[in-house]
Length: 198
Image 1 (spheres, rainbow, N blue to C red):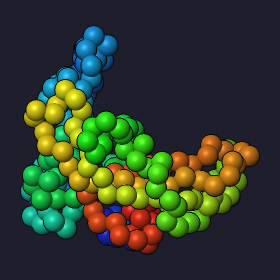
Image 2 (cartoon, rainbow, N blue to C red):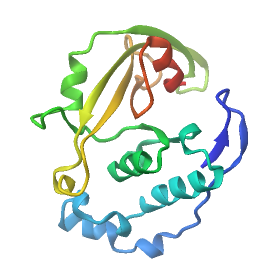
Image 3 (cartoon, rainbow, N blue to C red):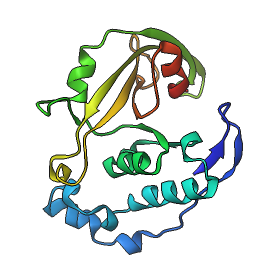
């Protein structure tokens, strides 16, 4: 985990984990035989994300001031629960459409009902590395997120905020932007959501 200020400037390295795929040999084959959510976290490569949360939180000694930021490989329910347990925060890009509310629908179902809360323009590059712009529609909502079905006896439901940033229109020379974020941080306004997106 790199340690940065809110302007994004690196301040140092708070946690690092060296690992090899050899240690987790057979995990992929195991996931083909059983539901991946039923493979214990200790047997998955993703355990390193949890170890980094613990290590950096211990080192910085101010867990409430830390925000652990991760891409889709950090979309791990155990990480969300660990963050709550140690009193720290997280912001991750999601890859899983999780069960929400009473468990009869998903967070995507709920986000489909959310109106656009604002717009945000960003600079991007197209497929030819030329400068381009994207206008993002911002949606956010606080939701009750449930653990995967196979883990519901072990982990509690959490109240988290889902943020969606979806590009208006269809770009000609690049993939359309659609970011889905999940956080335990407070998001009360468009500006709060934009801060998390950036």
